[in-house]
Length: 101
Figure (cartoon, rainbow, N blue to C red):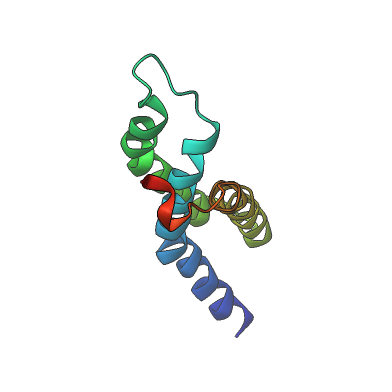
């Protein structure tokens, strides 16, 4: 029974977990990558790297012997990049409605 539940948890980390985490990492990478000469490198590079991020997370979840290590790495990346996204949303001051006039 325990091996079956571990198998399902591993499948969740490798399937929807890897996709969700790759998307959160893609959004979080825009905060710590440098903008570059044109000012868009921090936006384009995460889009290009998204399949590589997904593949790395998928294969790590499938091939690592310790499920606890998979969970720690995945949740750590989720907390770090999710925090960066939350910080970027919370750090901007709201704009008043009449400010554009």
